[in-house]
Length: 445
Ligand code: IMP
Image 1 (cartoon, rainbow, N blue to C red):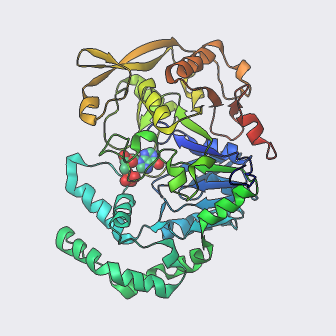
Image 2 (cartoon, rainbow, N blue to C red):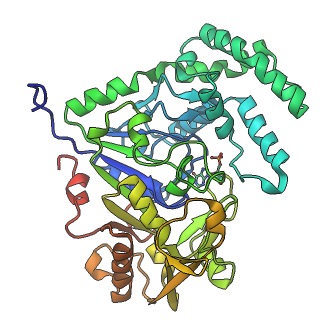
Image 3 (cartoon, rainbow, N blue to C red):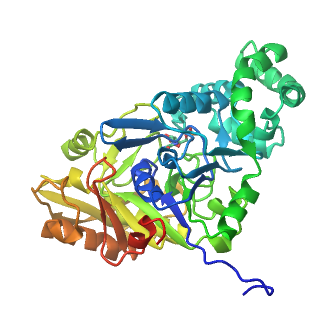
């Protein structure tokens, strides 16, 4: 009872990446979306790429939550996102062509747009940085967030009428053109042409724009179950990640509140998704990276190529130091360990349990990348297993060595493993005994 009003029980899960993105969140979200009434994204844009495998169907989604494959699930794009209207329309068209009903998608009026000049600026910044580049997805994410903070962004509300889009663009385009022309030797854009260029996207997306924060509040008041879908991962967080080799949004669980406009008290469960090993795309430090045969084998067996850019991912061993850090900054209540099947056949499995830093063994993630660069991982070695895990559906049916390895992850991170993924398909998922996720999955649970 709050202020004399009965408050409905909340039953919401925030799912976040607990490494450098690409942990297989799409698959986990897709599985758990079966129990959700609402799936909401709260940050990032089309830099994210989720591959969802459903039987013979493979869906590659960038903005749209995987929940869209579930016809009764409401899918929300929150105010914390940056949305590329052209890519979003493409995604919708592709889904519709394959018979997926997309009527349940809504876009926050306050989300910002990624427009062509943001992509040009991303490209130009990266080229300018040369060897020191961030390794961005070149989707214009950083420049769009920069414009938001500089208060010269264009928002989804501006897509609801061609006149308001024209008016807002006329305010911001002269400066963008000047930057493009004078700094980057680019010819710039003509206002009228740009408005026409976006007209079809505006017509398609405008009707989907709404007050997502209010809608979410109403859904929660009606006792609906909400799944918050994080993109990227803890180590790419603009504040807590390996700055400057990070993305431009807040990727931690708290952003689910600010990025949708929902109060923090509704966020009770936070599931961190971790691969059973570690990968990273883009530049920046990666202490447990393995540049030898083991790293190549992980890339080959795990098919480690970026969904958005197709770049080969850098691969290495599970790093408990970053996982502990991710657990702390997110307040993780459970872990989902993905791609455990990829480790089958490895004679031994290494896990970084600490770092060696200036002659000392440290267990906490360092404050800066300069310190991180001087860290070398301290490995503990675990026996591997040969069994194919792809058909295992119960925790107890995993080989003893695999269970021991999961137990070691739990102990090193200090958070329970609640879900294990043993293959890309929705069905290749194990919910661990005693996990609250068991009741979540049944929609009325
Ligand atoms: P941006 O987000 O495109 O600006 O890229 C900044 C950094 O984040 C680069 O290292 C990208 O490779 C990385 N990144 C962005 N989105 C993802 C993602 O969804 N998964 C993994 N890495 C990502």
